[in-house]
Length: 189
Length: 189
DNA sequence: GTTATTACGGACCAATTAGTCCATATTGAA
DNA sequence: TTCAATATGGACTAATTGGTCCGTAATAAC
Image 1 (cartoon, rainbow over the protein chains, first blue to last red):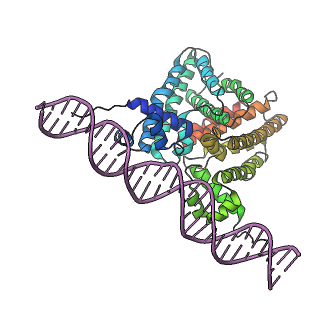
Image 2 (tube, chains in turn green, brown, blue, orange):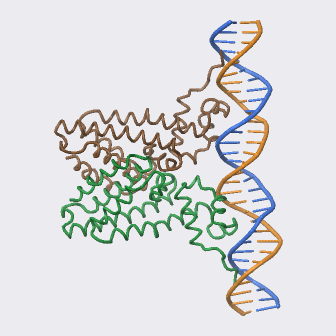
Image 3 (cartoon, rainbow over the protein chains, first blue to last red):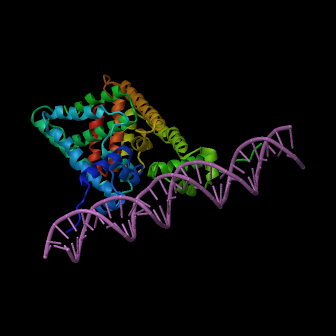
């Protein structure tokens, strides 16, 4: 018994995610964002509550869409090939590329924002789990050494992925970044 | 033939660095910072030019003090012990710890700010160089395998350091983060 | 159709933002 | 001692910030 919402909630959320992702939380102005997605303030506050609430919603949405897609990709094909695919994606990043939103939130906000921190941690743990599964499958298939600690190796892979994304942002030579991949893979063998 | 500056330039710069480092660039307000360090606006603009100019100066100062201290520490004692010391420091980080300022700048600003990016890159390359030297020394001393590509391994170590700092911010279990160290060190053997 | 309920546009707000300006104070050199 | 040059405090500004409020429009249940 009420008026229907005229905008697409998820479309607006994706738009906001894109801006937070590209520019960071503080550098994204509400007015600018509402202008870009074409939403009035009252509609925004009615649907999302506050800028901070929307960030949390955008972070959740990132995890359940973008991150989940990455995780699912880790399940496709041979574990080793999937892991190489994952790192090839990262190694292709340029300074302006949208690197993982979890890292953006972790570095800009997690230290002082527990709600962000909890979500970032959960996202990282999901990724780590996916790596662990891939490693375990690779070990069972004889692609990787069977005596490796799959979870420790998964944490190791996650750390390397985020480290390499930081180096991409810093514009460190792509040629040299790429030379770390054999070293990383050797840890699994 | 002019009035003398009453404040300590480097002391103010260090204060600003501390705030940018802890809270990020956008979240640090000029008024707040000037209040904390006890400086008037006219003095600030006379000495530093703008908020952005001060960030660049703070970034340079970070590199020539904090980062250089880390680099010098990598030269002390046995290469292997120095590298372990470096990673032990990182593995002791909590979410609220001041992780490397280069990472803060890289993730918040480097994508859209070339002047920041150039400085971050330079800092990272200095760190990488120090790792390369340590690895080369370790190889000569028989601590590490002599056939490793010292520079690629150095990039690998830098990436792992930054990745682990991101995981510390995300509050990923310290116990599991620590289990990556043997894996990292094994790449050198 | 009436009504309760929600959505919408946009005016409005107080606070804060980075940055400017000027009158005054202090200096070293001539 | 005068003078050119720089430093200082603080008032001031225009723009922007996140957020509130209200009159009006649209809807579904009755």
